[in-house]
Image 1 (cartoon, rainbow, N blue to C red):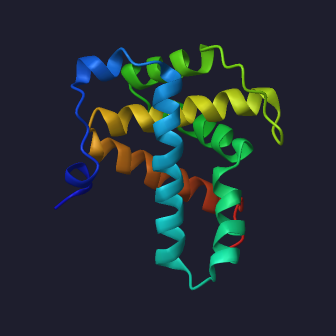
Image 2: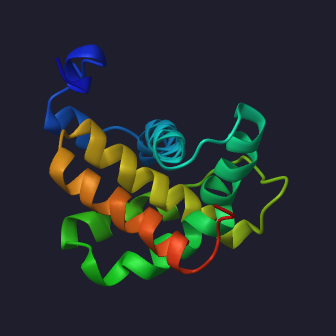
Length: 144
């Protein structure tokens, strides 16, 4: 059984494409957080509180904005369009602990992750998630 059997996506690709980009970001936030948490559990032996503290370094808006900047050149035109649409969608939520521009780009990154997940592009999703974590690790954004 794979994740798509557990978390069944009942919308077809056309339906997903017509969702609000903020809906993509809503799902992408969860997918990215789960990926980060799983990755940390796999590569460390930290206790839950330390896992949480470490995960923050990966999921904070500043880190996600940096990832998006770093992966721009490898994105397809469709992916760039998803990023642009999500970034330009009006969001009435004001960030508490982030610069507005970082928050806007972090939301765009989450939109891309959510879009890839919802359209079941799992190979590409895994590729982008793997690159994302690797880039942050190389830049010393984490503490592990």
